[in-house]
Amino acid sequence: MAAVSSLSFSAMAQTSGDRKLNVSSSRHLSSNFERFRFRTCFLHHSVGLRASPAASASVVHCMSTGTDVPPTVSETKSSFLKAYKRPIPSVYNAVLQELIVLHHLMRYKKTHRYDPVFALGFVTVYDQLMEGYPSDEDREAIFQAYINALKEDPQQYRADAQKLEEWARAQTSTSLVEFSSRDGEVEAILKDIAERAGGKGSFSYSRFFAVGLFRLLELANATEPTVLEKLCAALNINKRSVDRDLDVYRNLLSKLVQAKELLNEYVEREKKKREERSESPAANETVKKCLGEYQYLS
Image (tube, rainbow, N blue to C red; front, top):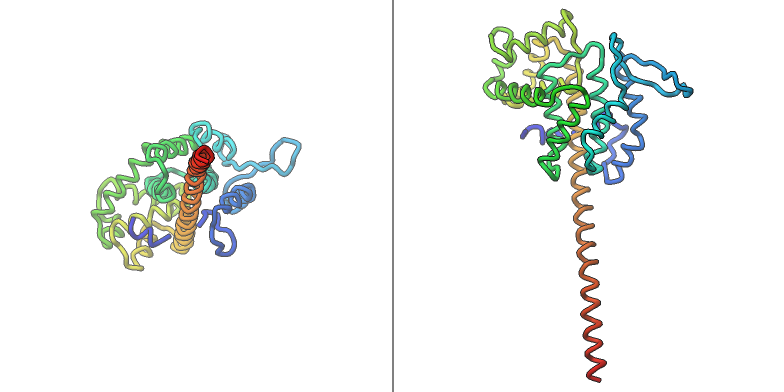
């Protein structure tokens, strides 16, 4: 994702100001998590709210207004933690925890319906967030646990994302926005989205969808500023919303890069300290031995 690294990524719920994220920021993200959850719930106005029957009137649950009562955010997070029990480094964990809350609210919104562009967007976000994770095996295990916790199919996410990526690589700026005039599996997916977004079905725009659109443009090398506008028009999507959410995406990548750099510096410092501590006893033993030999010779 060459262009995306020049794009950059600042938390999905943007904090005020442009403060640099340092190692202590992961604690800041964690301590502000409850405020983030309520704020996200409030901003997604079409997600229903119901007060908990418990004594505390301040407890709020996010839920769909559909017939089936969906799990709460806490239950989704608990499912994730049960599925993946190994510790996750704080820089990654803080962002993952916020991401799963946002994803939960999208997933259980009344108008939400899974589509491959949404899947491509999430896979793009996840792979960027987890780039450089210590273990490839653990990174994929976390992905599996995350999607399963949302009661969705991780294999479907990966397969659909790959299908759209392969299709986009074969497109040009022109063919990408003229999907409605052609036949094909991906073209049919985009036509369905356009129809639903145009008011003829259930459609819920989201930040992951915006990132999915950007990924299509990137892979098609459609760099002209007007192409995104034309694609949004063809899909009946509000371009202003897409621009806004892509800015959030850029900021999140940027902040994450800063956090990872600081984490790597911290790890290197701790490694050197451990090495120095391990060398110190050996040095002391050498000094003692030399002193003992000196006393004996005296």
